[in-house]
Length: 300
Image 1 (cartoon, rainbow, N blue to C red):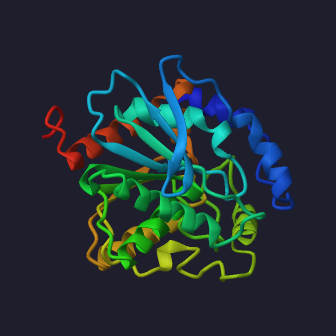
Image 2 (image 1 turned 135 degrees about the vertical axis):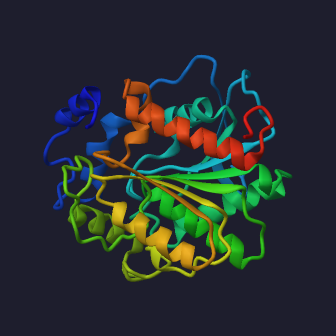
């Protein structure tokens, strides 16, 4: 059963948050109150280019490991959450994983439709490699639509012959933009119709929603790194993650899938709201990441 703290937050979210009739500007307005949170006073935030892409760098002096890097692709339904209102999430990950975080400010739809965002995400990964960061020291993460963008970036890297990172971690990622079914419980942030409309904002008719370049669960997944996927029972996008896991496994990719009872889309972002399920999820992610990076202090 979901914690009382989580249930209280869900109750505060309007029933029409994911209004299928909302256009991209309405979506931006609806999402705005959930972003631009304050950051810790001791969090260092630098904004600089990585592979020609503007990116935020987030780091604490207290990090046990400054050699590893978490490359995170943020959410926002392709149309929202520019970097300047999302610094708090970079800090959240830096604290949770005890390592520096890089978060690219990829271009948003509909002003910059497909393939702008996937290209930016790929260039950011390539840029880290060109800066001399060892691929085995890179952890790639993606939250919400950023999950699909992350996998797309890695597929581009594979096709270009670039080395893969240590692993990929999905925080309720979007892998199927042609979703049609609802979960068994209330997902306050998403509906299938709303997701498809954001997919149309993103693709702008250049590719179909079920094309593997937009819905990466349908792509050729060979050669990807170990995938660590956390999905919620009440997450509208869970079935896409399950399909990604199934097809990646058939393609010879290592997959670790965790299904969390009664969890909603994006519950990882509630870490600073006293949500025990978010705390536990990040603890599991950190254990996995430490293992993949072979950080001696934590390796088991």
